[in-house]
Length: 285
Image (cartoon, rainbow, N blue to C red; front, side, top):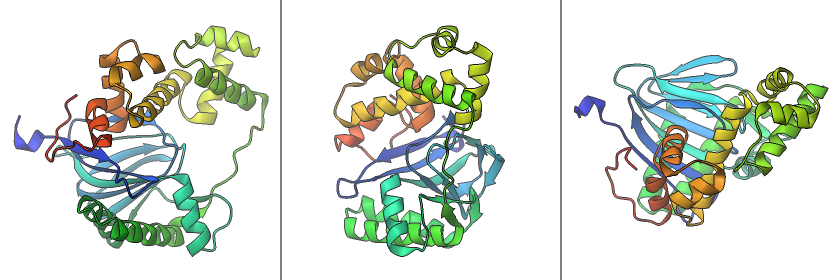
């Protein structure tokens, strides 16, 4: 493989930094399908261009850009130039961000970001400093810089997130459908069976679900399965066992979807949790 086409990624946690995942990667051909996160995404693009699809359109992020995505916001990503993009990404939990907001800003309610992509070279440097400090084992510096960076981004680009409550029968049906899919993740009903169970029609449910969650039920279910598989891998479950537990037909099926959504294969992800990561990893199972 030519050097210009080589992809690499490291997705990991520091044992003394609970509540935040770290991803440093270069992607060229890799594309992230529409998905969402329980926590926040704070990404610093250092080279190339990333194109991020969000509900409001597409954001092109070049060097010096910080991307800020709130919890449960559906988004996709791909390279915006032939050479791909390189970024340092932090995934702080909702608890961590809201703790910072309560302590260091005047924001009220659930904290969030009002912009998706902004040019902020200082924030880019701070995000990269968090990565370097964590990689050097300096948890005190990493935690300190992380909190300063989050506070500054909230002060410049933050505001309370709107409260999302069902306002129609369709929204209520979508919420109930999501609960059913979460409960029966390993053996989900068909769209027709699900709609019948909820007393609606398949197309009405499809429209309501997409409107409320930004993606159709089958896409949401794949994302939810990967989230649950991550939780199982975090607890030491083998990838093959996790695949069956969340409803994937086999481990290759899990590998494919996990790699597309998380950015690294489940085997590499699990090795990180076990502390066996080796520098220079590529996107292989």
